[in-house]
Length: 534
Image (cartoon, rainbow, N blue to C red; front, side):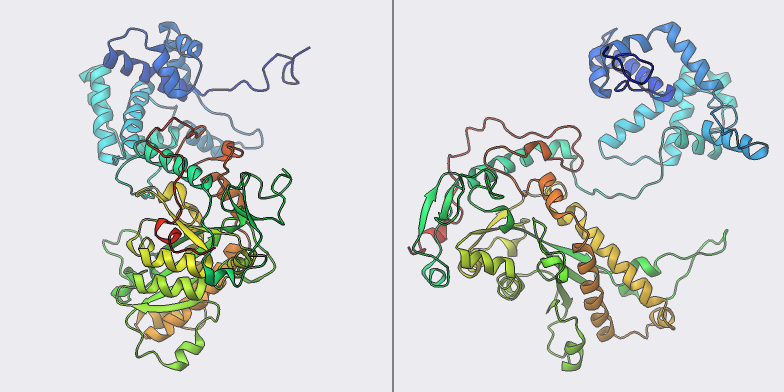
């Protein structure tokens, strides 16, 4: 009784297996902590770093176990399927072991990996020459000059070391100046402020908007929503999909961000060529390496109608460089009809552009119009860009679409924002597929390389690619699940906090802490509340 199918032992189903390489990492970390802390048995610290039980650290750091472990790791051959034989079996065995017969200095490699891990945790780069030089120093320190003189730290050793410890040459994807651990206090405070705002009653709509809402005379406070909810709703019912949403229903929460786009840069930046060439030349214009346009994307945090265009999400926008004064009517007619196109000198979301976008895109979205007719407020999450947080744009969003703005903290959009959290890169990937398909048609790739594709044709192509790519992304993207992980669908009662899983944050994320600096209520729009009419 109490046993499992795996051997009949209690706990066998959840027991973890640890490789010899991992055990050697723990041993090396144990020795480093001994030197740093001056503690002969830093078991608790090492167990906390690797999230294992203290008994495992005690067992693995015994001298007799270390000698046995190093001998097993050095002589490990790897397992090959019985169907494979001959030379291919020998190559597979060597590949799994990382070389002929496994590593010669497993303890030195484990210590080297600990140093690599410490550098990467601080965001510092690790280069091949540093790995080779540091490994030589470790061999010289632990085994003496005679052994170090015979160790070459060759490229073959480097390949084996990277294979054994799952290291690869990577391109930087997180370019923030500080690691996520240093930004966690700011992120937690943002979540606490959002919960306080959701518990704060939303201001009533202005007089002009009340004339268009249904049952505008039938508003009353409701503590379940924390807002002036229409009386025809029944928030006391826990089966209501908006139960616990606070001031803003879940389906009325939106996220907006800008994504830079370079015209076919990924398509023509790399090519297959002969080995040994010192330079790889590709014909083309210099503008392919610069930002050609800016994509303006806005999503509803809940899944909409998947049968409609863009799955019911707001239509995308594209900003091109220039003033747009000399654009012919023929070119404008060729733009994708459901893409909002605008021009400015920097091809960026400036203050005039945001005003036009709020009027022509956001306020005309069917979901926003439905909320306005029902007298329900909306919430728009945006980053701290200057054009997003001006008084004019906040007033305009409130008056036209009964919407308030909640800004993300600086340098934290990669952890909190839906578009920065993967949706923007998926959009660019789908546009890359469309551009590759266009390049394979006829002699388009030659025309592009020789500069025979006009700017007018490029603009038309970008709008069409953006329309097709956005429709494809919206119909397969899990908006609700993704928003629950990033906190866009935060509740007022703490229900669903266990679903929070921010990018780069290991383990369970919690933000429920005492913060005496926060008031009991945070007004949604102070400069609009005084102008609102009942």
